[in-house]
Image (cartoon, rainbow, N blue to C red; front, side, top):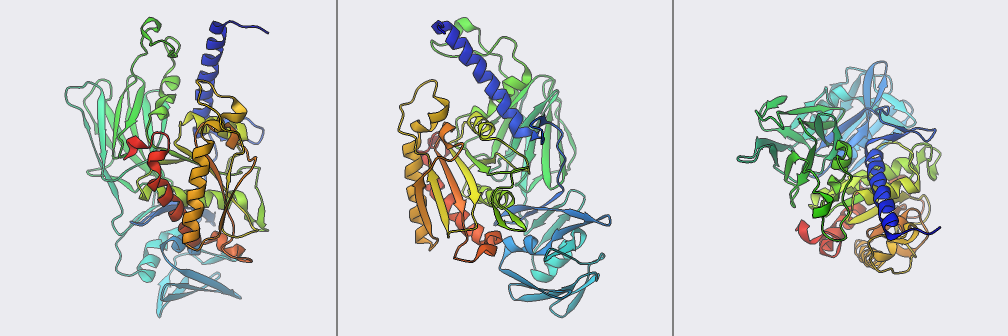
Length: 490
């Protein structure tokens, strides 16, 4: 089949527009078992804990209309913990303090004090479950002297004044520009729908400086801003009479919300530039938002949904562990001032092609595919064997990584060096792992194995995951200037 250059240009434009819309859908939708995209997934209950060192989310289960969370998982990111089961007794140690819980009993003992749990303590598959409503009291017993704030309705717990505050005001002399300033760097997900733009904060301890609720802005284009929180997350919803777009400052401490600028007529476009179609739909206009050239790491937790990955143990699936340490890695990158995004932040199924489309649509500086293995030791890093390729306006799908493979290998080598310095076993090799070949950015697959032979249980250890994540985040922060868009992020 023969085509003119003009035909090829329009074909590429149509394909690019379709990929942008599909990528945005993947980042905000769930894939149903039948392969159909669903925009109304079932929401998993979760609780989020914020501390000055880290933030993390835990699954919440309901038993007899009472919400429970695993006590070991709740305290593990905050310090050294251990637990053992003796019949119905669950003995627990956090730092220098000891506790004893009994299955079916509503009273626990911590040190020499009795603690009322309000609802029975539960043991399921060796895990000790406590009611969420007593978490502040338990923290007071295990870490006395620390400030604790508990938002029970939204399941958000703040430790040691870890809050990130924000203020919002309309920019003077610029109709329809809302400037939101934060006390620390933020990395919310951005979603649009008719009449508003939503910023969802999953890891930031976001709170308003003043009263929560609706903030009237007295502007025709952006009339109001609404703060809300639920299910362990905080959200800012910006209403708009026209499609809106969010622009981030280099330090991620300021977000400017403004009307989408209409595209210039085709006759005014620079030679070789691609113009969007006339009268674009709002969703298409906002979908280009993530292409802002600033440092961004996309973290892709492997497997998910019907794909459980490796069976690390009979009760431990790779998909769950991969998501857990992907979240730890995101927290450590944030602590190093590096913006990141989780490609999969729920138990959903995604094909390698869907992952590549969603990742490329985000225009990342680096793509990290995270896996877990029950065999071997330490950290295994993989880069694509794709041969080096020169940059071009349009890259082959199955070898797009070729433009960036040299940077990928440089980063992998630096990570191995740093991990070995920390006495964490590490190795680096090339392998055909999907979707690395199709990623148009530096890309690595990182597999977390036990710290030592036979120590499979340590894969669930927050301290082990944190030690690996700290090393990775430190190297990425150090080499950020060598990553695409990294120079603007300083």
